[in-house]
Image (cartoon, rainbow, N blue to C red; front, side, top):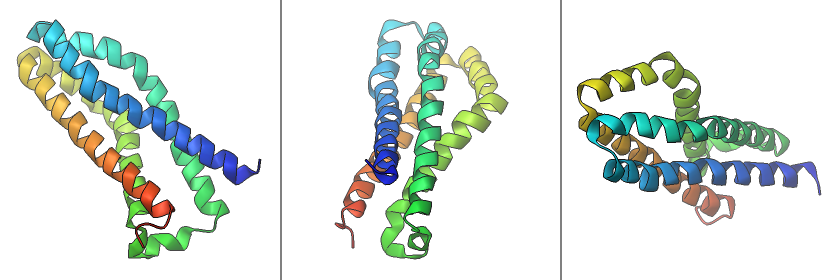
Length: 157
């Protein structure tokens, strides 16, 4: 096995874990919390459960970014970012950047406090907003995954 094969395996595994987790949170956890808890208890329950995935997502997002960077360097593929036919690579970087900023910058700096305040004042609306945000991120992620697989196999040229 060569280094590029290992990097691809790490990349795909990290993305499966990361986006699979986003899918679970969006399509299973958030609707389940809405059904099982009273509006004023939903945010606390959500954060308790989702917190168990947060550190895992940070690891997966980091591994996806590092392995993607390594593969781009190893393949000398930087010029692809100048070619519109490789738009799916821009999409991968954009989705990765959004999640990286949310997980490592926005959540610790202000999102946790903002969410706690919103959940205290308007619990049902706060959870709807969280669900919609997750739904948008999941949709962007799945479109990017599909486009990236198609693009990597030459189907988008």
